[in-house]
Amino acid sequence: MRILLLVLVLMMAGCATAPVAIQRAPFVDAPFSFNGRIAVKYGMRHDATDIHWQHRGYDDITLLGPLGYTAARIYRDANGATLDDAYGKHYAAADAESLMEKTLGWSVPLGDLRYWIVANPSPESAAKEERNKNGQLETLIQQGWEIRYVRYTTNKVDALPLEINMVREGLDVIVKVDKWEAQ
Image (cartoon, rainbow, N blue to C red; front, top):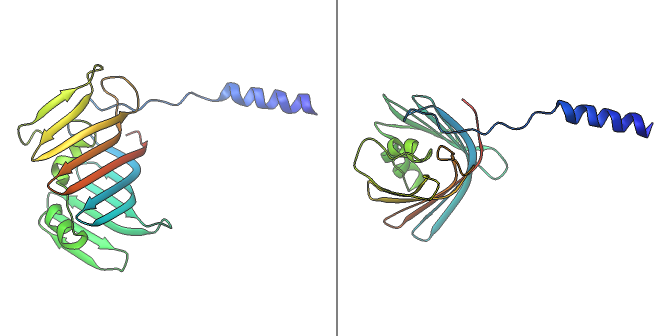
């Protein structure tokens, strides 16, 4: 019986495939999706939550509470932005930044962040870049933000970041990606 079990385990292991490394797409505003965590420090407040973000020409961001419930859902497209909170309240604005500031007490520039999250400078404004020995973006200064890329999925130049620290005028944001999803 043990031999049969060992043979089955070995056969199953032989059928397993190696995980595929997900890399940055070759074009700048490529779709992406990830699950992770975000921590925000502003003033004396500290907020932390799980995050699921899908970017496909629009942004659909779900912030999750400690038990996995949806604490807030932010949706942004060319027509504006909406935020639905855990209490069933629905908010709308012309842009996500003012909407986030009004409802969450802090905001990040989602228009730029969609580039920064995949280690690209936003094409909307000038940027200062520093790269590491592998050619990966290490520090990016843009729109008054200093963005540091702490860790990547691999050492390849087109690897996706796993940890990003962003600082601007009393607002510290840390994004840790647990899983990039293939597009």
